[in-house]
Image (cartoon, rainbow, N blue to C red; front, side, top):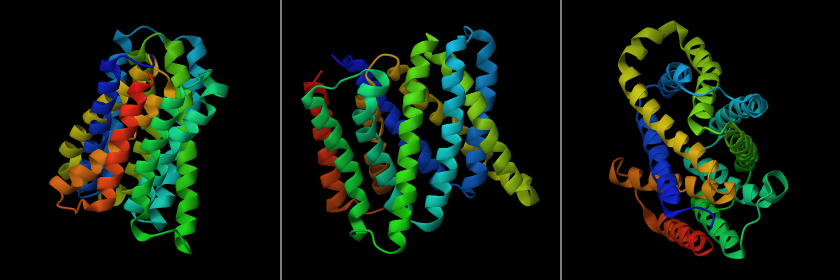
Length: 283
């Protein structure tokens, strides 16, 4: 049994939280400054929590350091991908591919082998998510360069998934690992954001900080759930369920941002639901 029902339900909740804070970021006046507030919120909450939590075991520090570096690489590659492509083009790619990569390498890296039904479930979820990138047809020209950056982002996500999964298991306490991760992970991006907007930072910050603070709390809550699940369940199914946030993002876009849902999103949603069912049949 890969996870009890409450674990998978909480991971799906984390996916909803992930989609929610991304929608808040999308609607913000200045995404860079708002994201800086999100990351600063993580630093502050981590610093407040660390004194009240058990110490992080020495064996975890190498995974934590690796995770921070991989998260930074992910953020930098992601920015480059967004510079040359639309969100709707690259987001499904770098969110749909990692579950397949995690499933492919989890036996080698984490000693976890999936049942055939679970493999089909992960594949269905990834196919459903990745299909959303085909709304403009097959990639060509500049789209191929965007695809390359999106694939690089997917590799970074896969790598930090393994680092966090193995690190949180060694920690013995998911909250301890999460607090240290949020503390260290937020510092580089926050400093970068403040530096980039230094000329007009304070007026913009005065307008966006409530939205950034709310998004930060939601983001921290969602990823803490994922780390907690990594400590209790195989990595590939958890990673696949977390990426259902793409479907929640599509629903939020339709219901709140008045974006069309369309047939492609409907097909993607059906594939994702089918994948979730297959994951549970393979428990």
